[in-house]
Image (cartoon, rainbow, N blue to C red; front, side, top):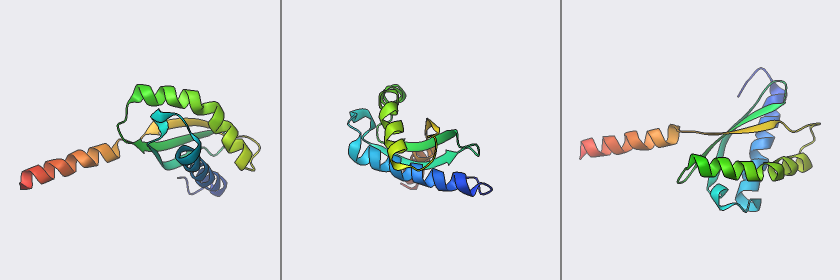
Length: 113
């Protein structure tokens, strides 16, 4: 998050909350049901938002198709719940750090025996 832009920080938090609610209770697409939103980074101009997520059984093609199918719903969902003039363009980015930390943990456990 960018500390120099309190408005984009507030909007980031609101988008994160609303997307998490949408994925948990309103999204019907089975490819997207296992998503957990980690962070949302909104640009200072408020036109773009990068949404970092993790998911069980991540498959890039499936998620890409699922996001494409769900994007109109997500933008409508956000526009109904937010008080901003416009909704930032959403870019979903898979956070690989959890996978990498799991692999490191498994290697440590294996070496300790």
